[in-house]
Image 1 (cartoon, helix red, strand yellow):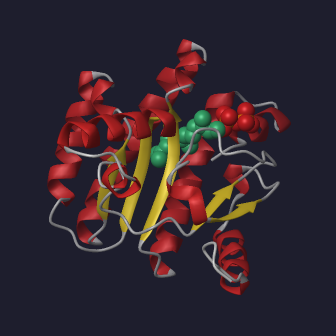
Image 2 (cartoon, rainbow, N blue to C red):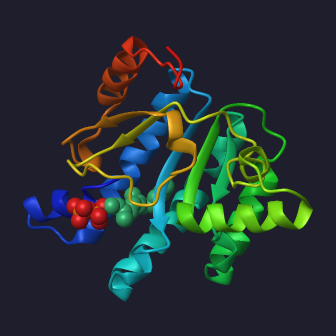
Length: 214
Ligand code: FPP
């Protein structure tokens, strides 16, 4: 969800306002994704590297996350949304951990589309944790590692979208992206609209996926 900072800078607003608008885009896009019938939407909200940001920005992001869960939980319960958090979220502040545990418990029985939030997430960290768990159980194979990834109970990653003109993965779903289609756009995250998602899906539908075959 890149580009919140630049969106704010272009308007001479504080970065935190860009992140606020980013949350509004999250809400609009996750509703749109459900309406379009997507089984899962995974959002990269906070990486293991984002701790390097200034303290006030980190706490603004954590505050936004808390408010998002508090304000939207009833909607997830009502709309049968399966909330899932990937990454080392248990290492976050105790109040956030408690809030997440409560939200997960209240949506655990839901069977609808998954809204996945990557929090304190880094793909290399995820793969290392999965490999360690797999090794403790038996031989390490691609399948045994995959079964221990944070995303093990999610459908395979089909489409990966990155906004704001950055063309790299930045430690997001590296394993899962092995055969994912990629969509890079210059649109800044706060400006990313359901129409952009529709355009990405339309192009996705036209791609031929061979998974290494021919
Ligand atoms: C990247 O933009 C965005 C982030 C590091 C944070 C994304 C988090 C949110 C939108 C808030 C909480 C999330 C949820 C799911 C409610 P940037 O700051 O790197 O922007 P820039 O590249 O323009 O500087």
